[in-house]
Image (cartoon, rainbow, N blue to C red; front, side, top):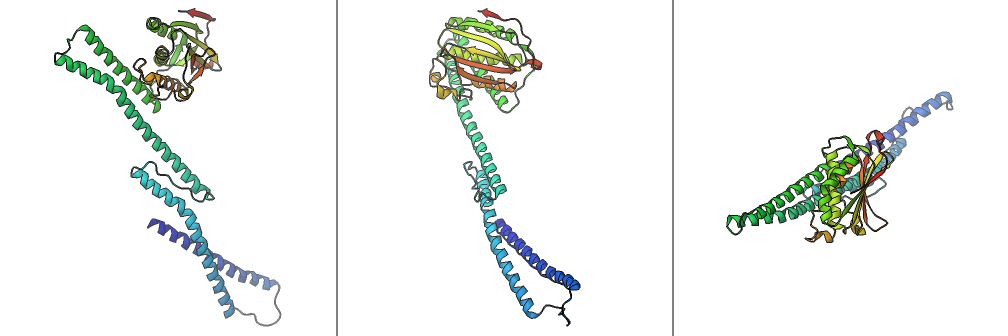
Length: 366
């Protein structure tokens, strides 16, 4: 009903405009000739004060022709205007009913504003569908990651309750290990979710990168050594403006990723300056990321085929946490393959006041 109402309004408006234009031309011609004759009088004889009948008939004919043309033009214009608007309205109704795949047709793109409106609507609908798909994928991934430790916990606790297992120290430690894994998974999910919504809490302040990296290295060195890795630190004491706890969390995620997927060998951590930013570089000895996986390595729950095996484990959130923390600091994270074929991850962070506080170069071996 509304589309017909709009069509009638356009036709009526065009008809009124055509009528007014005809009347303006008609009255204006009499005014023009009145002024003209006042300066250039005609030959003797009384001029007619009113138009004769043939003149009135001619005016009426031209008026009807003008109205007919106005109606035809209005109908064509109405069709061009309403086609994309009707498509837009129909698509909006489908999306409101739950069909997020509905898209509007721009129709005649010569109507620039209408075509832009449809294009913007389709872009909005696509983002809405992508968000819904991401939410579905997230729900499925979270359920998958939570299912394994919860199943183990339930089975063990049920076995203890039924007397199948004896609640000795080893079984309790195993249960605590599963609980620690669940706690870490929940914390990781919270970090990524807050970062995606732009609400990741950062307690910013001056952070000495060398100190933070040494703390992380001291913490992880025993587990890395038992897995066959050695740490090599080449550090300059840059001071960045950021959250020391979050920076340590990102570095822990990178080292955990290297311990899981890199072949045993040397892991080098270095810092360097690039413009008004400091870079934390973590390099291992390979094998690096597959090219097709490297493009989505920083997406949540992204895992290569090898990482899905029980040997490697992992939730697929580690690198996404690194990206989330780097971007929350106004920096970025990048991956590339080293000249030795290993993986190189770089976290770029803004320096405090744009200037580094640098100590002399002093490579440290650990």
